[in-house]
Length: 132
Image: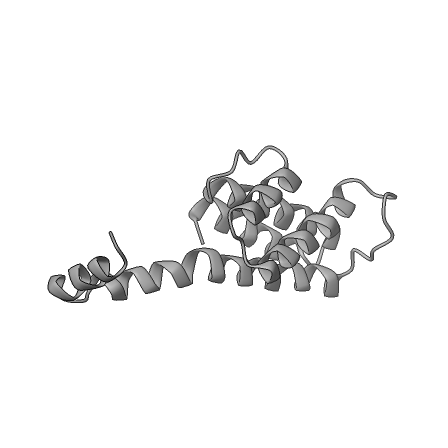
């Protein structure tokens, strides 16, 4: 998880017992920053998700992003939807953010590190096979 997002995540976990709504808002902010980290403008989370989907985002990750967006948005704009901003909901948002970071950052980084460790001849043969 990028440091800037980790700070919001840690702060959200610190205030979870005091304010589940505040924690949800911080998780939403983390998602917005994550979208920016993934190459989007980071100004409108819905537009960022749409652009990520157009770029081939896994539909399951899209759903996770949208859950965090909608539930987090409820914490920021109460009364627009009727979702509970309780501890269980906030904890679900933490788990979804963890999942999104794992799938969008951690797993690709791990695969790239392992691939880079292949012998150069093997990587060149793979690139040749792939027409690069």
